[in-house]
Image 1 (cartoon, helix red, strand yellow):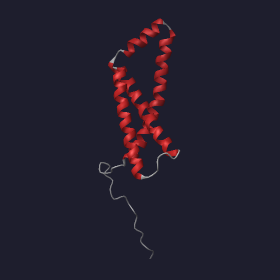
Image 2 (cartoon, helix red, strand yellow; image 1 turned 90 degrees about the vertical axis):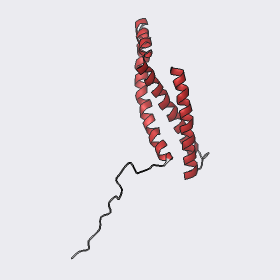
Image 3 (tube, rainbow, N blue to C red; image 1 turned 45 degrees about the horizontal axis):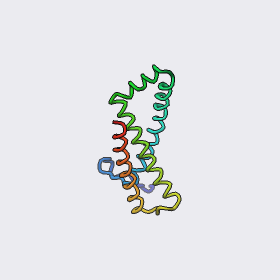
Image 4 (tube, rainbow, N blue to C red; image 1 turned 180 degrees about the vertical axis):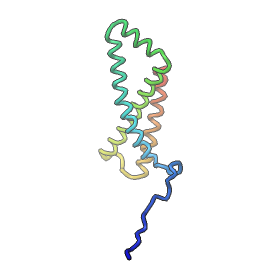
Length: 129
């Protein structure tokens, strides 16, 4: 008879016990913020087009922007854009060799990028509200 081959199977499938490094989380969030920013361009262009169409269109756009939901959406867009810029600058600094590509520097730069994005998010909230 032939040899019995033992199949290698994952041991741990409980996703709640898997912990990603902070650099992996920032990378995933950078991609998500890029998608949000891309979709936001359409929303903002629609709002700009409405405001430039006529005096009534401008008033409609102004009325839309007075609501809490619209302000929350704009704050979310600004937060995603700020995070995407922070993550992009971090990646560019690594690509150009200004930051070493090792675990310690990657982790620290990820934490700094998140911290700056949080500060910019708070400032965006002050700006919107």
